[in-house]
Image (cartoon, rainbow, N blue to C red):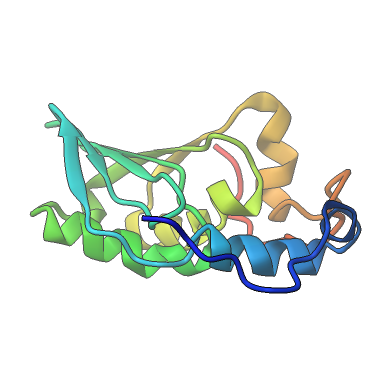
Length: 151
């Protein structure tokens, strides 16, 4: 299905210079905050993300693993998706972070408060996760979120 682009789209240069404009457009055009139906991918691996961002649940008998969390607003959607699949969000024992930007780690604090899960974070992302990605080299504080702390 072809999408019709809205008139007066910003240029690449405008998006590169205006973090707020970039984030607003990405959230809308890429559907970063739109709920999606959860689905089993294969074996114990499930998609529990939004229409535009991948969040994955790995189920095990010793507790579940959540990979990424999308935007800060995604927490309740992830919880709903996990429940729709017949699992308990409270059974998430480990959360893995792809990287510390808002579109991958934005709801880690929400999920950590709910589950008490441990975080697995790449060494170079520990400070960003602890701070909610404040003082990012490119985005400064424009894409900051509530930091969940580090592993």
